Length: 259
Ligand code: UDP
Image (cartoon, rainbow, N blue to C red; front, side, top):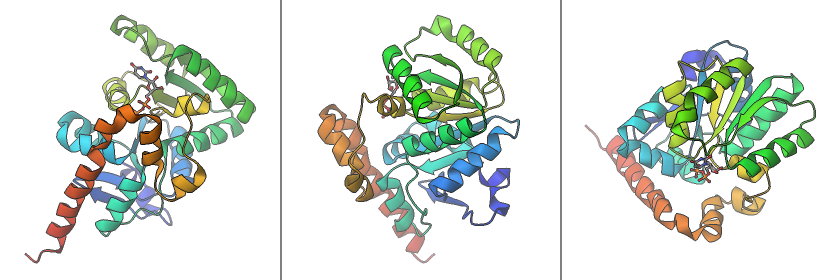
């Protein structure tokens, strides 16, 4: 856990919020990126989950996902819904730490210190464009390997062996939620010591295949609405946002009720 790895003793780290029984680290983006760079020099496996409301809501229904989130070394508040939930529960996170922003900060840091990076996931052409774009944006970036995310179960051992042989310190996994979290958890004993981050659709954004909401919408906490407009097929999945907030309100009321 972030707290368990000594973050609690560092200045400014405000600990973890408990949202529906799942932990969320109260980090700013800078603090999260700094903790990641400390972790990749630490020689241990370190799992980062970037959790939005949809994932946390899923985590309370899917016990396996919930246990993975609970055991992750870092869980960031990836969305306005999670930030709002932390405020309603009286343990506010300082700001939203979006998976894409954290990935970009980590790539910047990695390029600055020639830290080896491996990218796993996304469609083959998206992955290629993402690597190209990352190298343009972060000169000196040391991409030691990549594998697209549309592989067969039979390729699993080869992929793990390849990642081990390339010895990345940063492993970005873009297989979608919850597959990427389950993949990281399942193979963490076989993977080399590194920081593994589930980054969802972030490689599509980096590759220019998907766009993030305009900054004013991100700042107003409306990125989910932008995504809904762009991908109406996600409407069913997004129903989890109001359900998540209702469950959080229930938790807040239970906390207030005198015993
Ligand atoms: N993906 C993949 N293999 C799969 C399914 C999905 O590599 O079998 C990739 C997909 O191409 C995309 C990312 O996983 O790059 C998931 O994107 P999405 O926007 O769905 O992320 P989520 O909302 O699940 O975080």
